[in-house]
Length: 388
Image 1 (tube, one colour):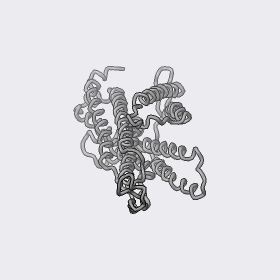
Image 2 (cartoon, rainbow, N blue to C red):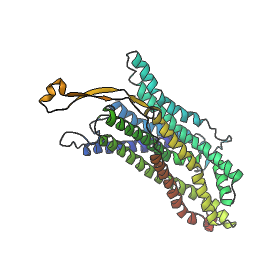
Image 3 (cartoon, rainbow, N blue to C red):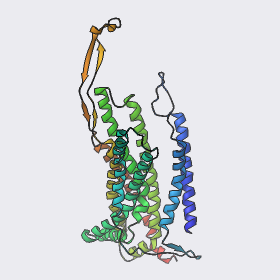
Image 4 (cartoon, one colour):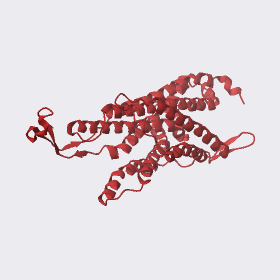
């Protein structure tokens, strides 16, 4: 069974990566529109190296299969279709926080390592920078997703200790009984939030460099729109990922409601109002989602901020301008020296864009809860108690 699920997850992921690669290649051709001066509105003339493309297209399906194997290592299925799950006796530990810290730390090592090699007039190994970036991003993503289990369990304990009302207590019991449900259902959404937060940090860094470029003539070359248009595409991709992740959340939430329909029907038959069960489903979804989204925002921003958020100094320099016409410019007396002082640029924290990314993710969770509640009434019918 485990091997079958791993193959199924790997093939589905491979299909998704191939569709994504095809969409990227077609979009690259369609968006390649140089203007009259030969300038491009987007960097469509740059294509990742074939080994990088192959690593993404083939690596993600392998990773999906391995994740499926890990998640099902405690599941056994009999020929009769009965599934037994060995319960996890120990509560989730907060060790995933170490991975969240390791991700930005890996990105933060890029600048010191490059300086170390530059001081010795050497080039760093070709694979060092990609390895640090890929490893750091993967560590932060895994840390946030796995850490959601601990957040769910902790939220359940807090709700159980301080919550009031049947709906809150029902949600608290579900969160402590299966804290890893949040990690499974929120994984794609949190990955999209990390990308969106990282894009917000990179945009803030670019805007700061563009301001310095206008003041000193140094920094980023080219028009501002060229870089900002590229970041707009990244933002749209993150928004699309949030929408797709919301679809997965709907499926997971509805599946959970249908799987527990006999339990819910028994509660209704014993006198528990459906509104109480509906509020408990909402608490169960939002209690781990809200802190997990905040952690994902912080993790995604810190990944980029360790490199792009540092102050940059543009040194003082001078240049000459001609004060006359083209004929007089050959005369040194017609030249005037303009002095540009030293400029220190510190990118601002993109609070507004981070708030939009977090709000979008939270709205996706709320919409998911609303759609799931539509299936709650049919799953709490007393007739469900007659089903075998």
